[in-house]
Amino acid sequence: MARIYLTRKIPEEGIKLLEGHELEIYEGDTPPPKKEIMKKVKDKEGLLCLLTDPIDKEVLDSAPCLKVISTYAVGYDNIDIKEATKRKIVVANTPGVLTETVADFTWALILSIARRIVEGDKIVRQKKFKGWGPLVLVGSDVYGKTLGIIGAGRIGQAVARRAKGFDMDILYFSRKRKKEFERECNAKFVDIETLLKQSDFVSLHTPLTSETYHLIGEKELKMMKKTSYLINTARGKCIDEKALVKALMNKEIAGAALDVYENEPSITPKLAELENVVLAPHAASASIQTRTKMAIIAAENMLAGLEGKMPKYCVNPEVFEMK
Image (spheres, rainbow, N blue to C red):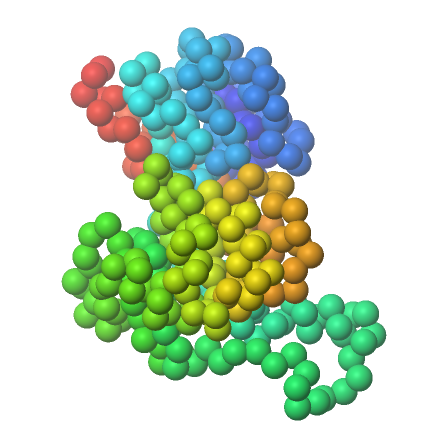
């Protein structure tokens, strides 16, 4: 029996898989303080964390017994992978399972910002709806426009497949050219400058790395059309939020729809005051089916690692070469 610390309560299906072990679960609805994590992992062999938990060298220093870190997320930029590997700690994530769900949500954001759905909802709820009018909440068409995908991984490609139903032209920028994706979606590989200048909708689907930090800043926003929209369901720090606020206020772009934020859960002042932006609470993967699958995978990764086996979704398989 191993001791496992969960930094948040996950869906019951995942908890049940871990019941043969000694579990300690943080009961708060918000991320536990870093000091709380450090205190709780002192005697734990397993840590099941979220993307919001900073698992850095300081945390790892406080966890001499730790064998496995299973993150309830696709991204793992919150974990010091190099340091964990050095200590022979297995790290695993939950990729693939949320691809279609996040792609659906991306399209919800695209349609919401283009057709001003959130603004319309407010008007109706506030009893300001006075009836149909030729100029009331006029938005932008989506059908037949150009969609620019930055990051053509699983999610980016899934978003592009949905764009086929809207008869959109698809441009994409990625580290590697994806010939099969190009054939399937009639997508065109371009540099990021061309994509920004020609796209009506720019959707981000990149991981957070030193290269993608503030990938979209003042310079890039000025490249975009004044009629274009920026969508982000990737990582908040990929966008310079202060530059985005300025661009939105100055109508340098038509609008933005965001599910993630640079300093989450805080957002840059004035962003929430703007009408030409849709703001979601990091909910792109929030379907019952997907969150349940994530819990199961995270638990299975944990169990495999504790048994000395390589988890199906191991981030640092080189650990097993060191053992």
